[in-house]
Image (cartoon, rainbow over all chains, first blue to last red; front, side, top):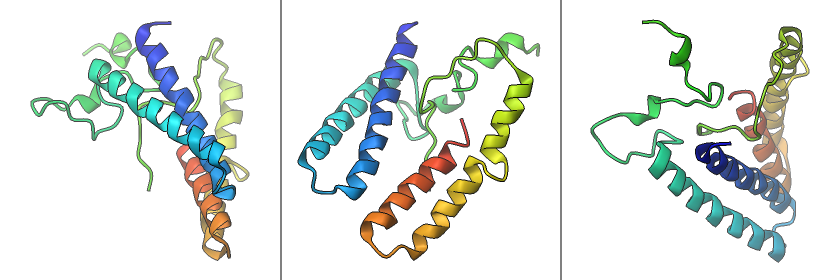
Length: 90
Length: 71
């Protein structure tokens, strides 16, 4: 697996855990361990997301590293990890 | 309101494309007992929930269920 995919899958794993903890906390709002885990996963996820976006471009349209080019439309998209232009002749 | 990110909740790696299975899975998204319909039920039912826990959980499940219908 290439470095980009590895990094993205780490973000996905933390975000998956965050969602699970979110649902748990909805019904256990004063569970200190769950809150601590949530905070830890949130920090990891934000940190990895910063690294990913600096290196490989936006995960959301709100990441705007420079104002000369709209990078949001660049490949890859989740359903098309290799990029679509491989099988398109212009 | 949900925001799109260029990632999935779980990694997908289709090794053997299977159009018939794909149709079945699509029904699980959009069909009468699919994820899309379920998400709308969660999001409607949250309006009549009496406690803060149940409001939150139906909101959070409904949002996820509706975002899970797209890549």
